[in-house]
Length: 248
Image (tube, rainbow, N blue to C red; front, top):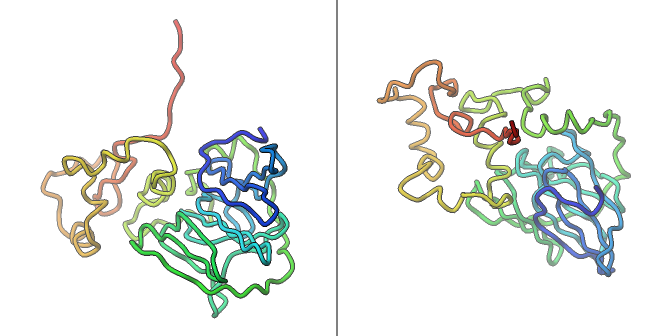
């Protein structure tokens, strides 16, 4: 419902003191007035350039009223103005700017500052405030029942079904799980590094690549969920699916 959240995350104020809150799993931005009353929503669920899939970071240019929203899964940054989508932030060559899990944003002195968590760095971008009129959105609205599954099952969509570099479909891959389990969702993530749990998450890229080439020493059974290169993934041990307790 309006004014309710499914994992609220980063927040920002505009020049008039209105509060914007990222509502991650509802794939929207909720706006509240100075008295904390719900005012409006911005964005809708989808995978096209004008929609929000896994919103995380938010920043506002109070001089131009441009609203920037980062997508922690696709790595893109959406741009809105007056509640309307202007598409994605692009580089000088016209291609969409793609980062490694941009989870937090800030705007200062005409620069967009991005926390690129999987890139292990903070990056700055100079922003050209000139944008064209809002892009037309020809996609059909997605029903809530479909959205609940498509929030992770991108393999059901022909345009987003491509395996990643590990040969893993997006549904149970690390990038998908990390797009929420990066601090946005309260869980046991603080224990991940204890006693070398999930050590591969923190290994450098060279060691990760070696693991894809070398044979596993533990002889992983073929029927155990794994990637193309016999690599364990998040879905090998974990599932986001839950069932309610049934009273007999």
